[in-house]
Length: 73
Image (cartoon, rainbow, N blue to C red; front, side, top):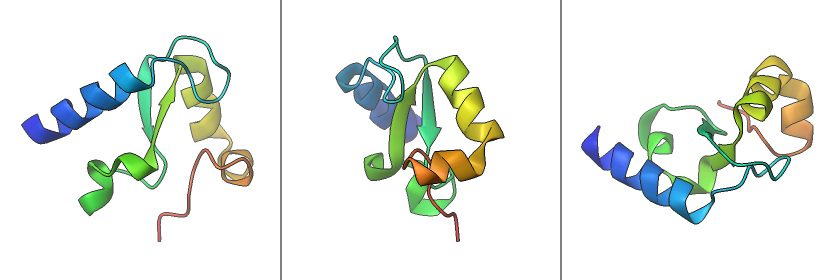
């Protein structure tokens, strides 16, 4: 958990704007989920504002089409 927090905080510092709408980012979206190595793999991270995070989670097909989410299998 401590390693995750360090990786997450560094990613958020390096990517302070929402990667969807360019507002200030507040959340970290895991494009491939938070299972196994994906949990700390920054290739699958996305800095997002809260409203875009909700939109991604509630609209999975849209999110996949635009690259904001990836298949988790």
